[in-house]
Length: 403
Image 1 (cartoon, rainbow, N blue to C red):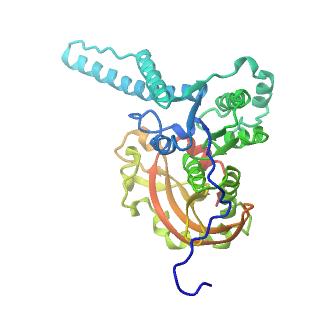
Image 2: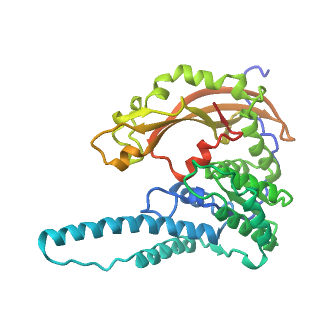
Image 3: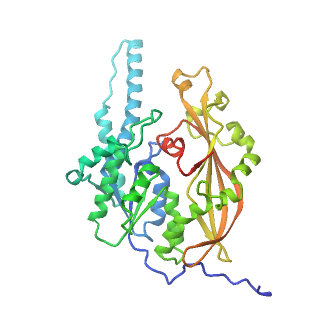
């Protein structure tokens, strides 16, 4: 140990002479672009990330045709729902006044406007739509996969709110076709919150060293932040993939989650927050759930979901600082009240997000050495109606979900 003087900053493992990060092509799935707020074309976190890294990482945007179509449909569907309510109101006004009223909005017009909105967003990013390769798709294989529930087609699940598989299959076929056509040595980032589609893409494209699949936009941001610290692309990809598994891997007692008994700590220290959504001051994100007193727990006592580890910084001693989001999810239902029958029947979920901040030493070969948790703190509490992606993220008890 040095005696006196300033502590010398240690170079991070994997540090090399600065290299050009090169071009990064972003291929997003609908799951990371969806935003409840239809005032904006897509999720604002995606747009903020794009603006933050577009220059340093020479970002290019490629949107599969199916993803573009889903975005257009989502916007048009919401606006058509508002149009139906408006038409109902006009009819009531006509009955009350005996006078006819009209407007120019139609479902077809709203569909066109939604298309223009999404295409304008793609154009502003300098992006392009990637056509679905209908002519080259092995339709017999797609049919076989659908019949036998081979990923990305999901096994039968009567509780699933929508069909699961065909749209994902088209997105995957488009991604594969793009990778075959792309001859440049670029980094291709497929960002997809849908677990089944993402893991299937990882398997299908495992031989293409250019492709990395990220579960979230935040995970891609971790890659960018690490790359800005004079680390090689290969090293960064290696440790970003390993960090999550070092914090948690189901039934692996050597991971921090089990070693530090994270679940027991959270249940003990924050039991009041987990047991009641009313203990958190932050208002729910979904207006339909704004009357929190009208809810009661149902189905289960809740379960934990561990999201990918996110890089935070490298400290003066060369420790890598990470934050692993730990989400507690509990199902609720609304009690009978004066609300509409539709609202009474709507299931709710209470999602409490914790940040487990930890640090690690990392060898030059990407091996994780010493690890320890620094703190665990609550970050967000949200009571809401389940969203489409919640079904895959929380309902399916995959390898990243623990009870």
